[in-house]
Image 1 (cartoon, rainbow over the protein chains, first blue to last red):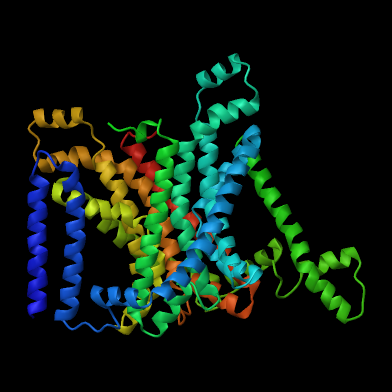
Image 2: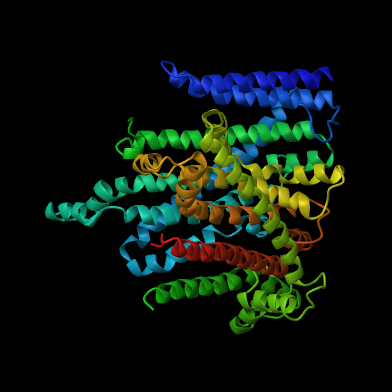
Length: 282
Length: 287
């Protein structure tokens, strides 16, 4: 009982502190913006730990955060091989190939409005489909190792990036293109110096959507068959053995990897599109 | 016509490519069989053979079509072999999850807009959660809920709802904040109560944002349900069809389930889009 009461008290105190912090004004606003969500997350963890311990929830249903942390500390090498297999080999290579192919396709069909009018609705349609379903087929074609996972990722990220890139290449207005024409710029020069930079904000929008899709594709594809390593494999087998602390450890790694991947792309976006209004400091 | 023709061309090109790939991918097996029978295949015979294999590497479009016809139209709807039945299992879980998830999302968004503390503490997590491959927890949710005795539609609906939840929160918060300072000042000069401010200004202004995020989240809910049907033990639903097809090498069955999932996704997104158009037109916001 003491665990339940204690954790609820901590949670209430954190909520009260957050309410006070949110009402406060003056200097240190930047610091408060970081502290409030951090406090909220910590309070949730404490509440989770206290409720699981206090109410005697079986670790087979929900392990407490401390057990998950202990598991991460113990089985670091398993987590690392899985990370290597799924994120670096499967998701990252697929993401690079898929996004690269989408950008090249967008540039290739750039000169044909006919193809664009045809491909855009099809691309939009495919982008809304449950593309993960293609995983069992690609696993049959490319085998159990990371190549099939990368193939699933390629298919998943291709259309969202293509649609965004085509929209981005169309983002310059007539005035800007006329200016390039008055300078007697060739098609290549206009593309390289005006339209590709103008397309970057749109491209990064697609790339960011693609990061999450890539991780989902690589993990879900492993449910259809994989070598004896990889995050999806580990999650599905550990669930079968009711080793839920290991499952949560993998999920924590996946969450960190997803946020980190997204963060890297956002960082790159900030470096490359510093001129865009959405990136300027107000 | 100017819009239909390019689309048809692209779809036609895809079908052509598909047929070409069918011949190319299935040819080794056909040649192998012919070599075992010590016969030589002429080119037309080879092409004909690649189109009619039982377990092709890549089934030809008409084979998938025939399988669809067989499992949709020629089988009774209540039969376990009927794709309509499996589709219904998936659709019902998707619909329940979508309604739960988007409803909860709208409520949380209202809370976030009205409480600065909630905004500052929850919103960063809601945004960060979109970068996390949440689908990875699907098998765990299924197994854990099954061990507490909850099986059937609900665990899948929980995953679908979880996936459709966050896009709605993020979109709806943007929508509820869409009215600009001028409009809010106008409401104040009329001494509008907070309730009136919400019902007469914020909520109507958020409708276009709501529908944009609903379209994303209904597609996400369908993906969630299908993945939720993957863990061993599931016998019903499009995801289970995918998995059993991949176990037994029934490629035609996999492709038929894929097409069914695609049709379902298109129908759901199209339905939300239809409601969106009608709602926006009645509200005078149609573009």
